[in-house]
Length: 324
Image 1 (tube, rainbow, N blue to C red):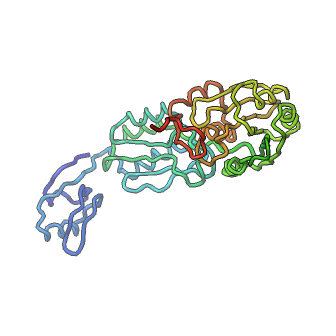
Image 2: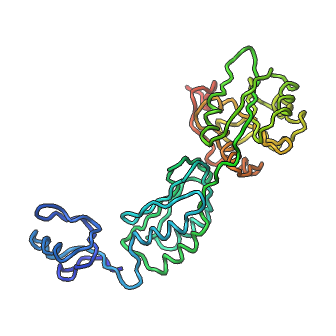
Image 3: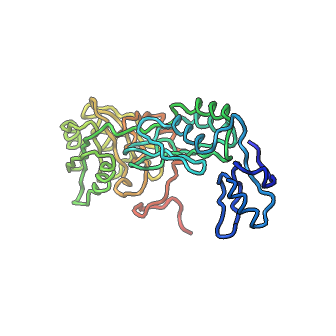
């Protein structure tokens, strides 16, 4: 592609680089200049104009953006029509975004004029959420560069859709305090997960029995008192029921007091108290992946510390930083 200022006589069929005011209107940036456009420009006193001129082997910006978007588009995503060198990928349903960071970096390393920006990996999405935007910065890119970018992009993005449809929420109670289950139910409903709620006394034996009786593949525990040790009521009840504790605590704040385990074929999540608030917390990052069939390991949770300092929520009794 050639870019620069040329005489009007050499500009027919070129792409206008900057909008120009003409009698009775304006020629917009990106317009392909016709003979009539050149007459209007001449009438406006313009004798030279800045344009982009495509060369053999160049792919126009919209066609290039659309091709790269299709290469990136995995299951559960769709490509919207390209415009001004941009094509967007959107979720076709609820879920979380799978991203191959190395592949995205490889695409962005091919040519500075070819760019891809995505949501963070494992970001929750609803139907229609924009997952990624592809922008061709110049008016065209070489076919060779576009082909390399498309090859690197294959399989880089997809939506992990919900695989869990039912959850049991077991809430322990003390002194008739509110359970706070509403925010948790709302989280599950985002993914179409039905939820049954059961209240039991805040005792290890009662909670253990409730866990063992539960049938759902996802079993959530919300204790009336904060879980402060692997031997506390929540984790102890999981072990007593024959389950396995795989992780206690997480480097996400709010959300430090989450624990994770399994019981038979069910995943068990011990929710931190902050899950009573609808605000984002560490439990969201675990629940959303589990619901969408994405395994969450001890190492996965350990890696959540980078970016894990989340916004303070009003319901926290102690702020992170004392006021002076």
